[in-house]
Every structure is written in structure tokens, then in C-alpha cells.
Amino acid sequence: MIITRPREWSRIMANLDELGAKRVFIMGCGQCATVADTGGEKEILQAKAKLEQEGREVTGWAVGEVACHLGGTKLEARKHHGDLAAADAVLVLTCGAGVQTVADSTDKPVFPGLESVFLGNVIRHGVFEERCQMCGDCVLDATAGICPVTTCPKGLLNGPCGGMWNGKCEVLTDRDCTHVRIQRRLTEQGRNVLAVLPPKDFAKKLKPGSVNLRQDKKRAAAAVRSDDAASTGGGAGE
Ligand code: SF4
Ligand code: SF4
Image (cartoon, rainbow, N blue to C red):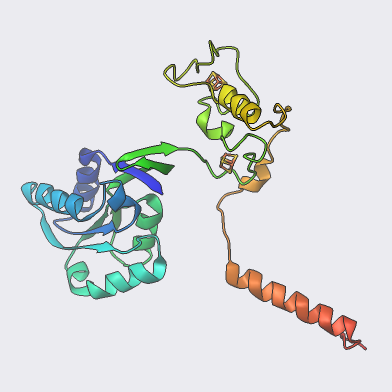
């Protein structure tokens, strides 16, 4: 899930002041921001109270099921059309993806109420850890399921670095070094000690990422049709 934390309130107020926004609609997210205790109903009501203390009117609020889902967020905006129309601005308590989806779903100025910080594993309720940076060139097959790119503070693909001491990380001294953990787990699993990993292919991490399954399926279907035509001698020009 996407981990968020509250944005500095003074920045939010500065955004609203700059626009001269007196009336605000608040939008949250029923998924990640709710689980992270940053953008669910409770946090929206807290933000509402704070805005009202600052002399703003809150015209309405909503917690979309999944704020980064364009269809669902547009539907939510339609459900709250009147409250949105009465607002000068929308304060969005979601990750940056959700904020942009809300911005695509209304013609009102939209401001982020949270900071998006990382893709997080839920360790237990309220405890999140970053384990993957979505590099597009995964090495977990070679590293016993432990990501060196993310869990080594220096992001070293090959290690340990010279600062490792007694198996501990020199940066996060209360933790075991990622590369020691990798070698330990490989040994425990009877696997070969990790060879030097080649440099990562950062071309696989080109921005912005985009996947279009519909287009992929159409292309695959067209390729099958073309193969069938060729095998039956019915190709173009024959
Ligand atoms: S190598 Fe690490 S950052 Fe890259 S995809 Fe795998 S887990 Fe994620
Ligand atoms: S001690 Fe290990 S985990 Fe810590 S920074 Fe060095 S290589 Fe990375």
C-alpha cells in the first residue's frame, strides 16, 4: 500500500490563503490512506474541525472507495456535485496518485493534504516498512527474497559496505546488514552464496510508468489473427 503522512498544516493553509478559498470540500480514500490513519473518515473530520477553527466553511466531504481509481472518483464527485460546486477548493487526504485523480474529476482547484512517502508493507496494524521501490528489474530471485535496493540504506546491489560491523548495518545500527541477511538466508536454504549482481537496467524504470492491458490484449489478439491467416495461406496480398 501507499504510505502517507500528514502534510504541514501551515502549507495547506498557505495554499488556501493564496487562492482566497473560504469554502472547502474534503476528499479522502477508503484504501491506503484509511489504513495509514491519514485520510479516512476520522482524519477528514479532524481536518474539517481545524478548517472551521480557521474560519473556513467545509461544504462537504467524501471518502472515495479507492481515490486513485478514475471511474470511482468521478462517480464520487458526481454524487457530491452540489457540495463541490459550492467549494472554492478541494483538500485531498490521499496519496499523490489520488490527488491527481481528484484533480481529473473536478474543475475545482485541488490541494494535497498528505505527503506520499513510500510503498509499504504492513508489518502489523499501524506499522509499515518500505521493502520495494518498484525498480522494474527485480533481483529477489537471487537475493533470497530480500531487496538490497530498498532495505540497504545505501541502496547497494552488492555488499556489504565497509561499514558493516558484526553483522549490523552501519547506518541503521539496530538492524542486521541487508547483505548479511541475504547471505545468511541463502546459506540456510542451501543455496549458492550470492555472486556479484550486474548493474541494474534503469531503462526499465522509465517515468512515467504506464500499463494498458486492454491495448496489450488487442495486440495479442491481432497477432494471433495474423498467425492464423499466415498458416492458412489467407494473408494479405495472397
Ligand atoms: S529489486 Fe527490490 S526494488 Fe526492485 S522490484 Fe525487486 S523488490 Fe522492488
Ligand atoms: S551495513 Fe549493510 S545494509 Fe548497512 S549500509 Fe552497509 S551494506 Fe547497506
